[in-house]
Image (cartoon, rainbow, N blue to C red):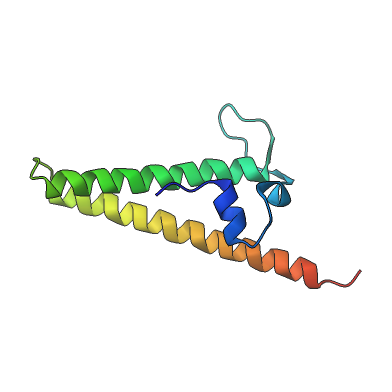
Length: 107
């Protein structure tokens, strides 16, 4: 399953990825500037979620095909993927909630 910032924006009810782009301070990661765009942060995290889900799918495929894999390693990769997807979905839910709260504010 491949996700992109466009699909995240569609899930959040936005028209495009540009609608969710803003500049936010982020902890300086190695090789990154002091500020990243919100879209870049989400894209990076989404890539990590995709990587963990891909690793779990590969481990399951190897197990199903009879290749020599350790069952506990397969279960760990599945649990890691499940937790990363759940965490990402919860973060998305909080962001959508925050966005909706901002829309309800009176100026």
